[in-house]
Amino acid sequence: MKYKLPKKAVITDAGCASRFLPITKTVPKAMIPMGARPIMQLVVEECIEAGIEEIIIVASHEGKATYENYFFDEAKRIEEMMAKQGKEDRFAPVKRILEDYPKIRVIEQDPALPYGNGSPIASARPYIDDDEAFIAVYSDDVVFGESDVKTLIESYKQHEDAKAIIIAQEMPKEVLNKYGIIRLKDEEKMTLDNIVEKPKIEDAPSNLTSYGRYLLTPEVFTHLDPKNTGLDGELWTVDAITKMAEEGDVIVEKTRGHWMTTGDPKNYLMALLEYTFENEDFADDVKEFVKKK
Image 1 (tube, rainbow, N blue to C red):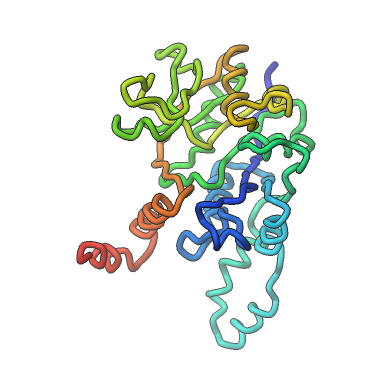
Image 2 (cartoon, rainbow, N blue to C red):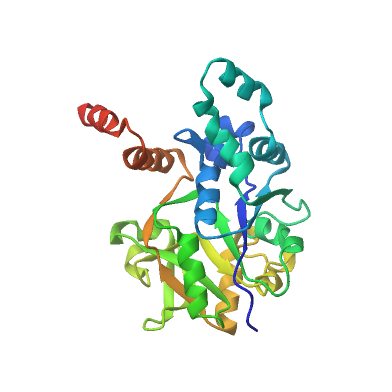
């Protein structure tokens, strides 16, 4: 079956982010700042750049109110204060979020589902029509440069019969044991066989690392079922995608940007530096400071 091009994106941030405690006791992980914006906003903007019209943020019970406040609260008190101080330009980024973004819906992860990175996606099932493909994004993965979501949609125009499309990045040999590594079924067609989680370096089937940028069809929900838990009793997106690869083509596209994870404090800091070097007018000062250390 051919599905409509994606107009919806599911962005997930429903975990407890234990590596970032205590801050994540009250702040969802993707609300940690990247410059003056939270990580989540960068991910939302990547989707907007690709033409996505509706965004579904899947949050924890505790995080749902935080996201609703950030994306929907008009913050009139702050706006009035900025106006009195003649600093309307500082409030302009807030108005852009409120006025220019596409439809954003914040939902809570279904508490009846098992733990696992597939459960937030499964929780969005009621908002995905049976005849449409959709984008799924992990919010702790950030992409600098060209939007991966745009690459996924462009690829789907060329592979309308694909069950799914996933993004990969080539990584150095010495770190292949830290990630999910792609085994290709057909290297010429770039179709997926499976994804090997954290293989021994000498056993890695390629140097292509899979991360949280997917174009999925509704068929994925057949496999994102509580009965289909995998390692550690968790519901895994990768397991569902592997099952889809057994039923038809899952296309692998190499990123045209530069992926970095923010999933732990070390990698978050490196991603923050990358963001600073690429976007802030004080980047040279920071580079000089780092050199002196």
